[in-house]
Length: 216
Image 1: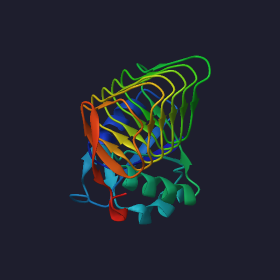
Image 2: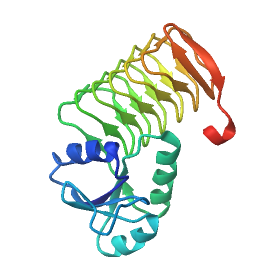
Image 3: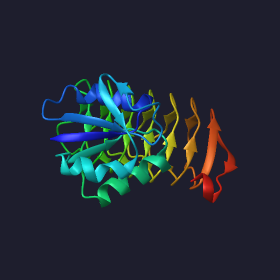
Image 4: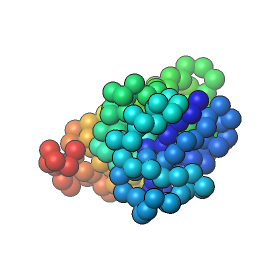
């Protein structure tokens, strides 16, 4: 399948490296609304303009896409826009990721990076990032547009609701729910449920901010 990568930053480079292992994918271009010039390239692949160029690329044979943007809100907007254009969201799963053989459900447009572990019974929604070395234990539910940062450890039967972000190196106790649009700061230890629309940090974690509508 001929695809495009949406984004041209650090996450785009990570996704490109993962997709190089998949011989069924041909990366046509990176799509980003901020480009340095007409000759800008990443790993010899050209960086083109914003979504307005996609109808032309679709006519040229592009059929799939993956959004390589760390910010949940922006990634969700890109994901839905491309989906509305009838492009097919594809997954980027690194061959070193450890994914249980039984009972794992993975949605569309998902990135699972180097050395991540997905245990049995886990459900992962659409447009999710499970970043480098993260551990997602048994029967966890990761809803749409979530970003699990590098080195995060989620114990068993945790629910991470839509658009939540869990920062690098954080540890979450079993049976916990992380609320929708919530941000958990890097290095946090989460021992109790965290509500929707907050920022929480620390060990143990404490809510330090209510997120405003424009921040979600």
